Length: 258
Image: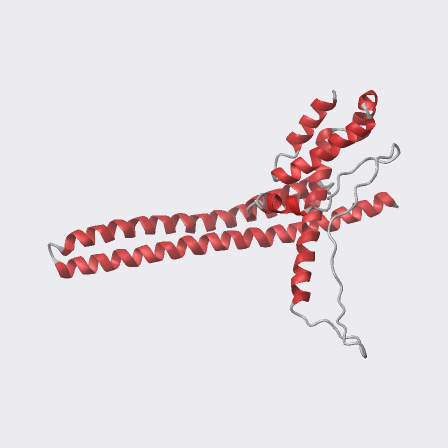
């Protein structure tokens, strides 16, 4: 296996990630290969290990970082609406801020290089925001990260049951969405029939038209409500499972450091 093959395998293992995060990780390891030089290519591949295993580590680290960024943004928004304490005698307000991004560890032959987030400059912020995954995509990424963690058989079985319950939940929500679409279509058809009936029997036509418009409104209500519930459920589950990934990843890193 050479450098190009290794990076291709790594990219395949990261295909579930948004393109921005995937490209950022691949660029990190491309630079690592460049710094090591062509003569040390085989040594770097041996040092990094199986690209599939490395992809799982990157996936977990990305989800961990996203969770921290989400919590930091949430805390920052909370602090923004709370007046900062005033230092007695000075009238100056003080408060704590948050910094995001971690420094990239320098290449060390004795330490496995691990991809970590870099500070995002202003030129890349708009590109990153435009590449944000949907709530369902985020949930899928977080679940993939959980299964990438070393899990005991009991925890693994629990996660399987949780995934089945999540699947059932979303099937119910999707059924409401489909029902809303069906009601909307039937409402449109009924309203059109009512408009035609107005020319033959105005009273009956108005009744039919009113029923069609009512179905139209109910269909929109079911569709918007179902989509909102799907996004809300996916976002809440992603945040909850992201917390599990965060705690487990931090625990594993602390154990490795010890």
